[in-house]
Image 1: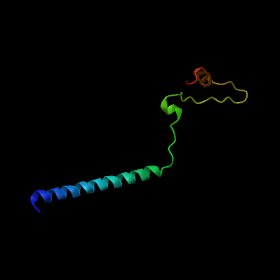
Image 2: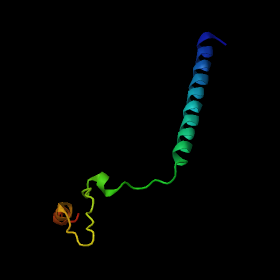
Image 3: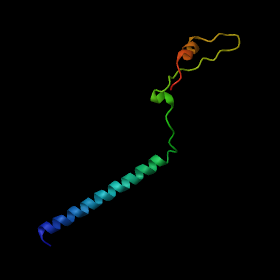
Image 4: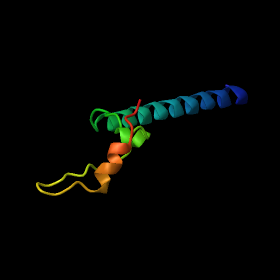
Length: 78
């Protein structure tokens, strides 16, 4: 084989090796991500759809604090 043919052969071998390495890395990445379990949607607070206000729980004989009054003013999303 002449010089240009030999160089073309090595370029093809190198390109194939890089392609196989990328494919194996992709399969490993997918396997690792898939082993973490099912994907769950984010909570509404993460999307900014509803405020993250902790509800105030009134004990027996106590009045609810200002947090529950603020939560009552917030309109429902929609």
